[in-house]
Length: 274
Image 1 (spheres, rainbow, N blue to C red):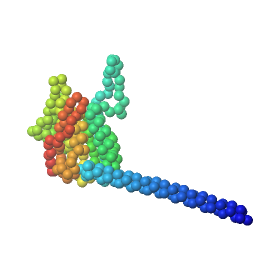
Image 2: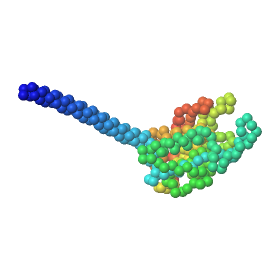
Image 3: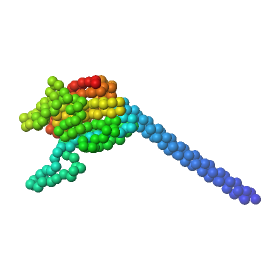
Image 4: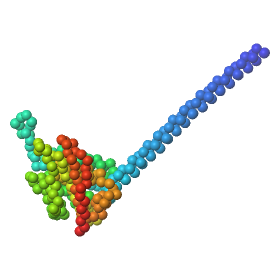
């Protein structure tokens, strides 16, 4: 009887230890899961705050663009296109032809379009950008942005002739003038560009329709105009005039070294009220 009782007692004590160990393992698992949950919550909150902070920064940085974006968040972008239908293949005398829907433009203008579209679509509330040619411009958009000057964009030519008759861009000399102010890009000894000028023309035709033309003496000037628009300090007079004035003219300058362009500097800001 004692032996059996002893064995019974020993068995009881052994089972108690196993139960204690199992309880401790359960506590460790629970603590581990709580740590994971806390980490996920912290990461989620941090991610959410990061998105909110980025949206606030984006809104503050591009506040001047938000002022001219229409309520429906739709923007029409008119593309430039040089009248080049064919080219000679390098190293051969073969002539190749472009399809009618393949637009040809200076490389800096293509880069400027990509930069502008990316900027508009990255605004906190987003913007729907519709690309079109100068032959298919629609009047249903609250904001139309035309890229490229009179030599490559008929819409820019018409708008400048109507709203800014004091501006002229003479070809083939590539000399621009706004009233008595002339813009003649300096060239190097090998006839390469050392600088270029970009121009922004903003016209408000009524409370619901606004047009912006971005162009330059050369393609690098068009790129400078786009960069100048994006980089305008939102609280500056130039930036505010885009939304408050019926006519705004901005001139930018950039230095060029080879294929690289330097910083863009605002030179002239003129406001006209109709």
